[in-house]
Length: 247
Length: 321
Ligand SMILES: Nc1ncnc2c1ncn2[C@@H]1O[C@H](COP(=O)(O)OP(=O)(O)O)[C@@H](O)[C@H]1O
Ligand SMILES: [Mg+2]
Image 1 (cartoon, each protein chain N blue to C red):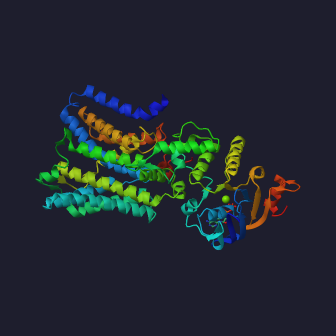
Image 2: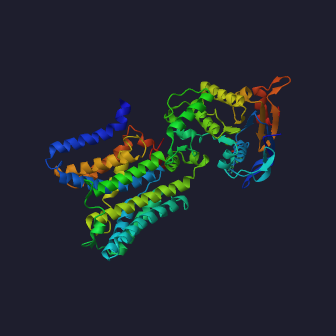
Image 3: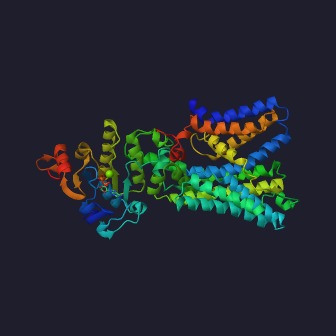
């Protein structure tokens, strides 16, 4: 059974039909890449998956039960965490503040913040991602792009998210940092978490995803495994899918 | 070392200033003069704490001084009219809180930027203050149960210092040690990220602006109590001082962020500076010139990154960047 499934999802913004008839089944534990050119509808779909907006048409099911998210917080509570491209972290806040943003830990008797426990827990999450940062009080803006993505992922881990949606996580990163983020995704996969990776970067997709879904003009034009009987999907083929809607 | 200077440089300059005045003026360190400085710091400090709380959520409250003036005349009118002090005090606080709440609604519901919304509130408060008093001050022999709030000492310290300490401590605990405080900070630092993380950012802004109003109300009650009088516009001299205290405070302790200890220490520094200038024979207008310079310099020159604070970005001060 699919962990999350969409049927006939459509999204209209006034006169603009951003998505049309999207069917999608997300399998537990897979890394699913969501590709498409600018304006293809990726962000619209992410917003629906993350609870940030309700679809104009269609239905959604989580664990086979029909559902609708009332907002990002609702989605988060039900195990769907989204790491938005530019909004993932608060740059001037510390690592632990970012990891526990909106879900801070307190301790009795006065219900004051338990900063030590949050710092320790943050260190633990980072260790699970094999990211080594000494000081949990460091403002996130002083971290490298890859480390920042790690902090954002830690927030998803803090919620024990089953599905982690990442919107263009490598878009602003250099080669080395991109490799680091791909490594983070592999670790999430190894932990058994489901990752939906929105990306333009064909190389990244081929490197970490097991399946790729391509959108074009708001429709799903391809849905196929990355590994095929005659070898892996090549970046050039994927480029053709994205540009022409067919390989 | 540079880290130390960024954190404490401005505070050390304040200490140096204090020592300088102590050496240059024989009057400066006398108990009488120190009492004046600390009392003045209390009014300024409480008002500036309110401004700081609003600024923590990246909202600017330009109405604090006019709201305090209005609350002061409301309080004064009631005491003067023979009402029980507690009624007058509650009324003064209520005026502050109501104005703060109105600012909060204007910003979060009507979506008017706080810079403009609070300017509007300030003008309305000013007008109401004159309407209420017809421009005349309330002065009289008010009951000591009212004037005793701000006058006199408790446990060896002026009551006003206790008020400032209490408000400062409460605000500091709120911002640094509570979940609500963490949400206020997150709202100011990264509005959208905070909202997506489930923080009710609009409520946080309303809360911060309401607290700023409450601080203005308290400042008003204490001013009226201390002076046994209330006149329209009586808190207005604190306006530039409050802004300067908060901005200068952002260069101390937690560089680049509005923070309560910084605000309090900066308030004291500014009052020391103003007092010292007067003692050394500088004309009154120098205070404004110095204040203006501090306001400009604390954003333009700050090694601490005040210029990168979210509220500055929101105002788009840094043009071309
Ligand atoms: N809030 C919106 N209002 C109006 N049109 C929108 C809105 N969001 C997206 N669109 C339109 O929907 C289409 C798909 O956009 P989007 O989902 O952002 O695509 P992608 O993320 O793949 O670039 C585009 O034509 C875009 O202009
Ligand atoms: Mg997009």
